Length: 429
Image (cartoon, rainbow, N blue to C red; front, side, top):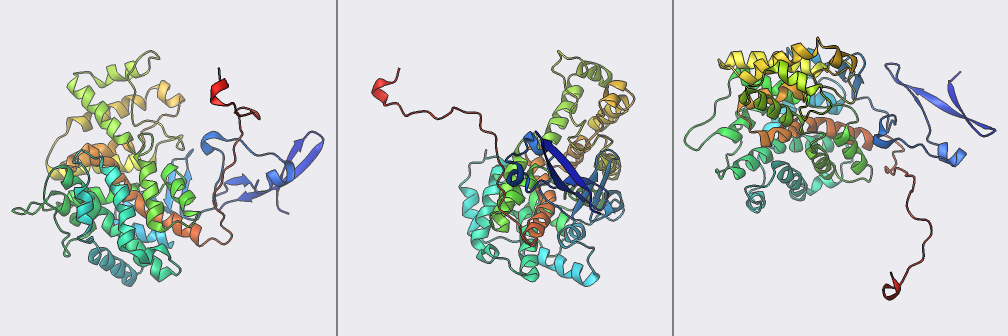
């Protein structure tokens, strides 16, 4: 017997079905709430609202669990392959050797962008934010590939997905080089996804960038750990835009705009700025934590706490280990990593943070890793977007393939003026 939830309004009782997911998550299906009761729910920030059913990513914030298609993200640490994870998220399973080879070939062969697109880059001032360029150029990219406007079968969709995942790194690298006044570097067919991106970022006509294995593994894992995170702001944006049957490229460009917001994609920059301020200001981690706990202090411990996780963010644990391995592999020391480790140690033993369930999140170590690789801070959110793109694509396709999908159209509670007459200007007081 299916379970139901009862809602009593006045003397009338209504019943609504309860939906249960694979991992025991339960939700009250209120799709017919307004039709039956004349009422809607009010949930600012959608913290208690499920917008869809999805088979892509599972999160248990209380237990600190994150799984891609059922696979715990910790298992990717030993096999860091962003292309394989992208396939997994988009198509629902790990690829066969033949499928992976075909997908990798697509990523390699379609890395270049149309020569005419270079003129678009030149139209931006050098000071333009890279995220603005990225969003605009993904939209422009669709104009050079009109076949993406209608994706009606899996093969056609796979082609479009591979092109977008491949070309986003080229757009990102070109945006970076434009901001530095440097010549564009073409993708190199003999390189894999991450080394090819770093080649386009950092090579010079007279000296090619060589990607160290430690850097390759670290950046692969950074991208993997950002690849999807359920119904976050940018993913929900991609789904909402896609619900209007907007094409894949336009929907993902909208996701870039949502990610651009400092409350979503820019947090690791704030963490790095905090660590640098502690280092340059000769403040001890202990003193900074003490200030952060004072209500009247402007000091804030960035990179702790999460909207979903009420336990340790599992991505932060992996990234902490990656940061250690990367710096060791590069033979360098970073005082910011030492400060971050000390802040984590202090906070995890302090009841102030424990009681409030403030644990390190994904942003706490990612900035240190990107800094060590040589990625400038104004490109941090772009790196987030490159990593998150497979998740956006997966959600767009899942929604597109779900029968009965409707255009997203939230309701509201109006709080403005009641019916008001128009007053001619000459008699307005």
